[in-house]
Image 1: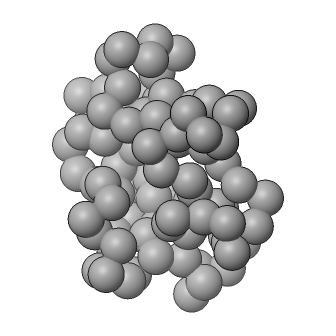
Image 2 (image 1 turned 180 degrees about the horizontal axis):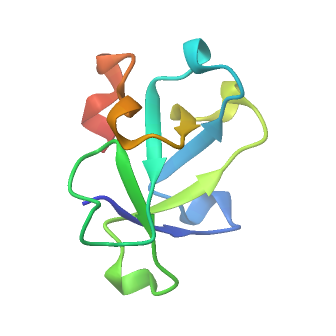
Image 3 (image 1 turned 180 degrees about the vertical axis):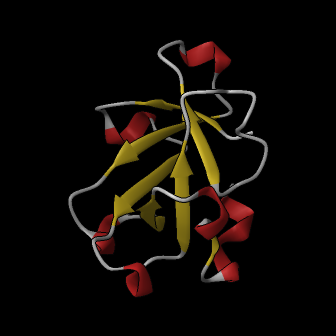
Length: 91
């Protein structure tokens, strides 16, 4: 967990996500991996093309105002983690 399937239909999503350009504007700093085996923590995300394999279906929004959670992508796994723990229940 978490493995995500991306949808283009907002109403199909379990969670709406916005990607922030500035770390301090995010709830969660996320490290994205190609390995589903590495995605064992809420801050380490993997994506699948098969909906039935996903833990959650996500929709990426254009604005933070429309998102359930705002993330910041990091290239360093150890930098990933919660910046605002009030959103932990969403994942």
